[in-house]
Image (cartoon, rainbow, N blue to C red; front, side, top):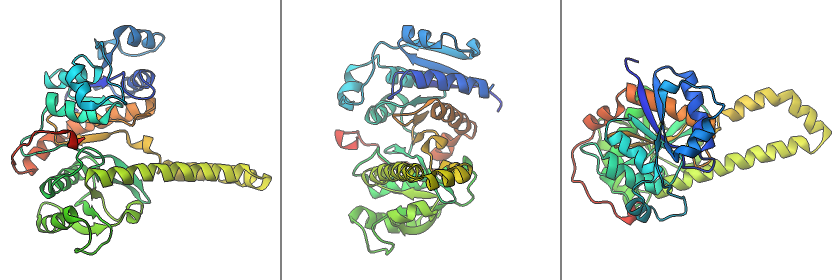
Length: 345
């Protein structure tokens, strides 16, 4: 890497704020010499949290923000009224060129509105898209969109496919990534109006490797590298995915602890089981980038730990190093920009 990357972190967003942001930042600084971090939030609280921590003080800065956008607040109202919220102050740092990227575990809706208002969209992108990596039997796939654009248009889904393909190829090293359209069946005639109108557009697109529709049950089985979805369906798949994984892990643990035989068997397979379940651990993949913004915006899980924050910082470093935003700008065609409404949340 030729230059140091600066990442702004909304230290007050998320279930474990500011502890996870502080500890994750310290870990990221220790593991990576070419990153600087700006923690944004209540200065007194952050300074107290850093007491006793060992870190390079030349690469960590605190920027004070007097307000916090809570998860239960209406995103549009909060963004309009709380100008000094930690999330928005962090985004302004990207806008002003003081930071290359911003990470937050806070409100998704506020991130969407704030990124559009303060960071801006690259030319040719009408709507940004959230895209997390989700585990599969052979690695992972990119799910785009998973919560940013309810009621998206077919043209937007085509752009999601292009942006997702660029990310998987240039950042994750997947050559000619397979693009699948989330649907209720694999036949071209199936699906709602949005899916039926999007299918032929993806089929005709020469910039991607479109393999057709895939059902939700195919998602864990590595049927596609990029899974294109409208935000409502994508978010449902993501949340169900996380819930089933947590339930299975709980039942496995319960079964192993229910008898002496289970305990002995559990001890014998503990290491192998841990490695297997690690594949389905969301914390291994950091946050979800918001594709289509001029500067990098990463949405971390609301319950992100220090590990997820560290990985999210490293995500930002690679994203900026590979100049993904510029590649996306080249790939998408200019389109009429539309104003965001509450329906986009």
